[in-house]
Length: 171
Image 1: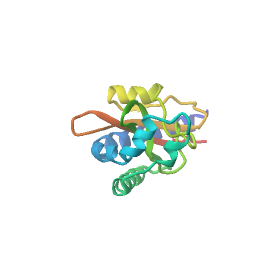
Image 2: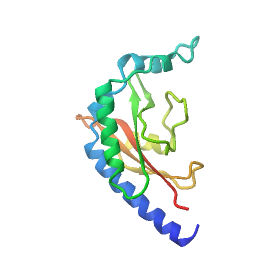
Image 3: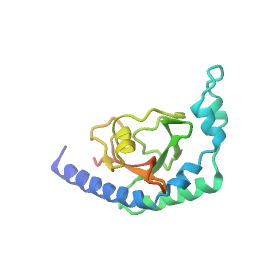
Image 4: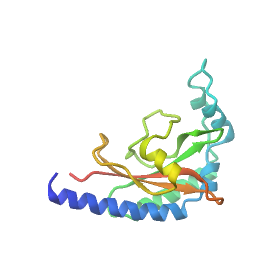
């Protein structure tokens, strides 16, 4: 990678870390936790093995909370001077070992796979959830993204989710 790209990557990573710090303060954990309905969480936490796509059929959100969070994430994206996607992952109520994408803004995601309903957090996602710290994902991922994860806290200080901030690597 040329030195100019390395410098740009470092600048972008630093800007995403600052954006993550801001997001960790302004993203409301109670609001994040209220987006996906109880019924939808129940179907994700307890999938029907006979009807494997039933949880997708029952996926539902609280519209007001969803729109408010989407607007917050869109505003965060505007705080950097390069393309950025801010998405929200939340723990699945009833199965705290699982997370799901609650709000997705754009297609610059390192972790989400199209059609994915839930996942076990691994690697840096698990580290962010467990430590409550901002985590910079390692470079060289097949998605060619620079990604920073920041925890989302509720009013009790518990980590209820993650904001994923991803940008395309410079060429």
